[in-house]
Length: 194
Image 1: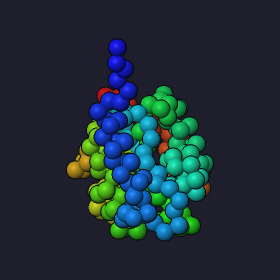
Image 2: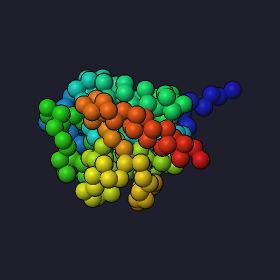
Image 3: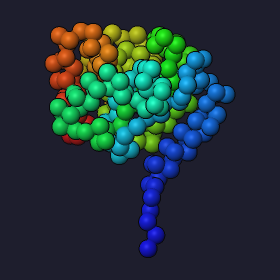
Image 4: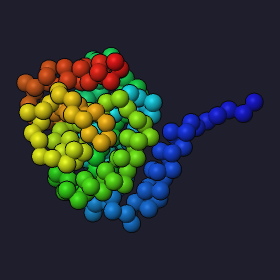
């Protein structure tokens, strides 16, 4: 009996990622000083995708998104909402670390979306996209909205329904917003599964 190791989504995503990993330093995704391409991670059949801004130092070293302090906070919120990291898909709008963790440029965001992110979303086809912070939200909807004005509200986009909330790094600096952030995650997961 032959065991089927990869499903169609895994094959497509591995093909996409391997091209950019093998050619990383010669693609428009590369940002000077970055060590690694940090691709998405998680359940390819997830009904929900979390999209951050860009990898940080720890993510750059290990080539996995949201593993540092912000990642731990995000995962705590996801766990409190009843899911595990392995049951969701997590990625960033920009796939490598900008120098000194600066905010990604408009061009870097465009490359991240057009070269990988839109393909990730097409392959996974989630019910809901949770944007973490303004860079991922405004990059996907090509606007300049403030998270404080739209967080927790559904926004329709060409990529699917978007649910904006704070970035976990913002919560680490503004602990008083942690309950709001965790409530947003609970609501997003509930919406994605309904």
